[in-house]
Length: 75
Image (cartoon, rainbow, N blue to C red):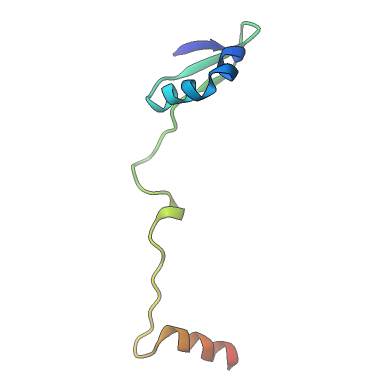
């Protein structure tokens, strides 16, 4: 784990977060005292987040789905 001051972290946040993306952990100090640890995010697997997964496909046998929905709304 790499130790950095808050001032250094603020000045070089983008580069330090790139290091975290590559697997490095950071300990951030303010006035010599630890205030935060930054670690790479853990993933259960490489599955896509739910908002990126394919949408649910709806289908109705023997009828066009949009017609069935319109009939339901007007009926």
